[in-house]
Length: 67
Image 1 (tube, rainbow, N blue to C red):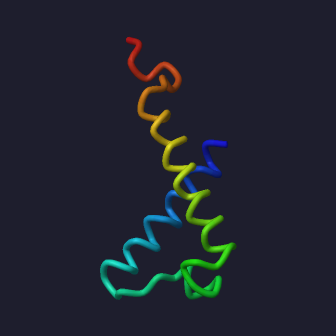
Image 2 (image 1 turned 90 degrees about the vertical axis):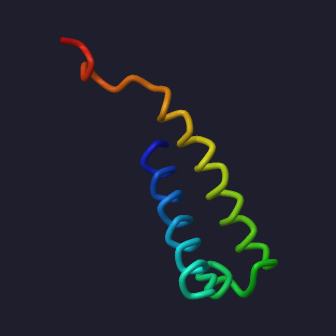
């Protein structure tokens, strides 16, 4: 789940980067507009993935801090 969420967050970041730099929404272009059902599903999945990735900030991974 973590890897899928990170991939979706990266896709969202790249899309927002293209909007900010080029004024071009790649997801909308591929899926037929911002209001197309598939675009809205992708936007929602990216948003949910972002929420999931918040949990990564509060998890302990391995024995990194044990000495």
